Amino acid sequence: MEDKLLITVKSLLLLALCLLAGTCQASQLLPGDLVFREGTEPVSEAVMVMDDNRFSHVGMLAGQPDDWQVVHAVPEGGVISEPLADYIAAEHARQFAYFRVKATDAQRQSATDFAEANLGVPFTLLDAGVPGNGTYCTLLIRDAWQAAGIDLQAKFKHLNLPLYPGDFLLPSGLLASPLVSPVLQDTDSPS
Image 1 (tube, rainbow, N blue to C red):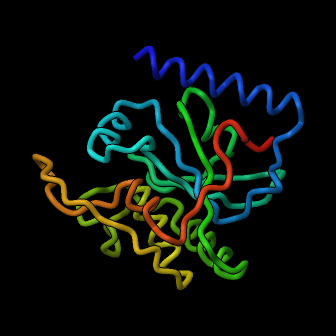
Image 2 (cartoon, rainbow, N blue to C red; image 1 turned 135 degrees about the horizontal axis):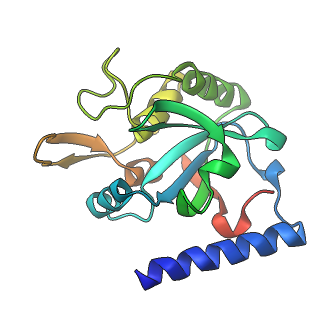
């Protein structure tokens, strides 16, 4: 617990220094970039234990540098859009990082259009991805890029969950894609 508190304090201090120094560049980000975070909710701990990864959640940037929004799927609300500042705020994220999918501008626009067209779709783990059933965060991202004509080659993981056994796309399955690379870490957060 102390290690996680130290990471949170360190991340916040570095973010504050970055903002005060004016070295953060929102212009380094593009629509369609992925924002991974280690969430603060109990479900985040469960995801990270199952995934053995430092991130528990992912969303997609939409909009523009002066008004970034993050489109993501959450249990309490389904697919939603919220300001980037809220998505990465300390009460929601212990740490976060930005990743980029290798794509053209047209493919980025297509992926963000798909994600935004899914606003309001319910959150589900059961039969996720089946039309009309709903989605979850990583599947929304994979499907958005697939709709844009890009196969992320995401790796699903079989989990023997008591009520939901099956193959699930966890954050590490997206990060393993050869088309996904880091852009900024939380210490380089955009202003």
